[in-house]
Image (cartoon, rainbow, N blue to C red; front, side, top):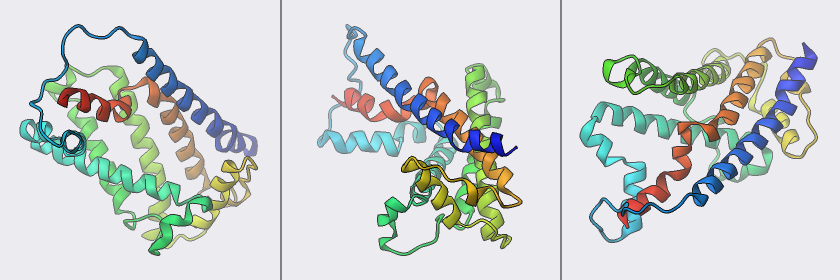
Length: 235
């Protein structure tokens, strides 16, 4: 079991980020190599300043709001939750203590950010079973949502145990030691594998690794290309 924990918490993490980085480079290069389309892609009337409207299209999604306001609401909550969770994970590395200019707890939201993200993912998953979305769904869509759900459930359980139920055996300090050791290439998992609920961390990291490796080859790549595509549409 100790060997399996080490494989998931150390080499698999490095492999997942290597696959992630190489996958994104491959996707970008393959797109740049494709011949230019013979038709104009500019479909919106030009408005000044262009970049302001590009950012509005990207982050506020006005077209989605007009067509599907409920979907728009869950998308906004989902993206905000992801943003705060990314900040929280960055703060789990000592090097990035700059985020603590204004002192606050790690993670932000006292567990409710993870809960909001979980509710959004459940909505996205069950929406796939509606007649309209089911006809457009492919196995990749379900796999992506299930990986995210498992990652979020296990990660949130770790946070809820500490913030809601005062289960303080494993604190952000232990996570910081582990993640910082990975960053400086001196892996140390001793402080995150002694606790009774360390198995949840191992499974959380395992599913997160799978998601990170799957990311460049999934529809999630829209996160990389959304701003450039909206810029092209705006001219």
